[in-house]
Length: 448
Image (cartoon, rainbow, N blue to C red; front, side, top):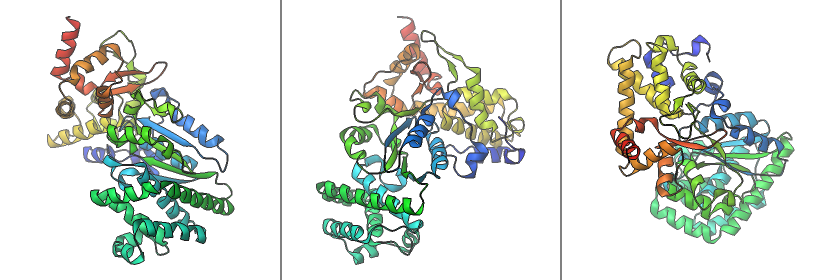
């Protein structure tokens, strides 16, 4: 896969910049650098989400779960969904980490986030909520939170005023303040949540009245819109104990807002014995890119050349490989150590670039690649408890993961990766399979 020459990085510094492991593709970069990987991933998850949105009638709404390993490319795929459907839905893309405390998020936080952002999006289109509905909700919020115009205004600085806009109603300012308190203040967060949860039925009812009013006016002004689509990205970064509480204990509450919502969920909770499907529809999974040939009884696995080429194309779409690598072998070595995990690939690529640059190499050499791989390997080893390595070795041999807490933790940390296709299977992160602890665990199993 190639890209117009003007878009390709031609030196190591530019290659480093263009291979950002944190920033997902969006805007013009989607058109420049996106690689379709449905076939290589052996999944129809993105297509299935599109079918739900396509077949959904106006005035109807869905709750969609979107999952995969952190860094596997979910955010980029969600940006594609946002871009594709913005002509049929009022699409609102939110990074949950910007809105609340990802390490302690509760459903009430998401209620506040959704209605706050929907109000903002509608106001940008010159659509305002019904005055009586808005006043009723504002008065209720005043009573519950003991806030008023003066107390709220004191907490709104100049930057916040610019973000809110000059015509922001009191509700928008209050929700902005509450969101900040929930995100940044542990004591205020507890107090706010306790007050709102006691009256959650009223809160939910008023939010849904506002959503219905907003959608009615949206359709009147823009008849082509089928609904309001809210995408909550990075919710999969919640720690397992937080996500288990959110998606199991409060599954019903997450589905009660009257708009279509895509939630990103940690892949680890799919393995919970509580069964996510008992409360939600089938989750849509973005698995690793298939760089291996599955053979259940074989270790180590052989590589799948089409899969390797598909992952390599992600880099080749961004850099002029002939100018950046001494040979294609160096690129393929990085691909193999990525495990088909996009963020890990980008991390390895950046490490290789700065290593080569630091050694005054014009191109990435084999020893630069080896050093980059070792640095990320050592980082994984430090964060992986020694007790995990026996289980990692068992998974390498059986391609199956246990559904206990350790299994969930290894999925969450990407010590174990999930692949798809005719079979669903697991395999250790290739960086950890290089470690001495893993090799000893494999030897112990194979010699007993």
